[in-house]
Length: 103
Image (cartoon, rainbow, N blue to C red):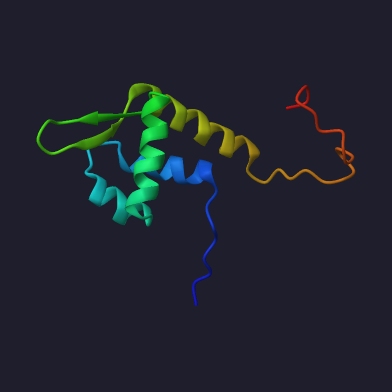
């Protein structure tokens, strides 16, 4: 049996931006990201406000990842590659010592 893992907000936004590499309708985004229409609309609105996603087309509205969104995806993927296999344990950073300066 397949084990399902809940995605966090960042993973959902990454899924939407990845799927919208080419113009895509909201219906296809719903199916491909496994979200409902309300969630896709909310996330799309946020991503549009941040200029990571844009609306294209007149009669049939579609969404497409902007150049800024593509750069965001590249940066995210580089970060994941760098952190792959890395885990913070209590000996490396004691509790309460992780501050914004460290991050």
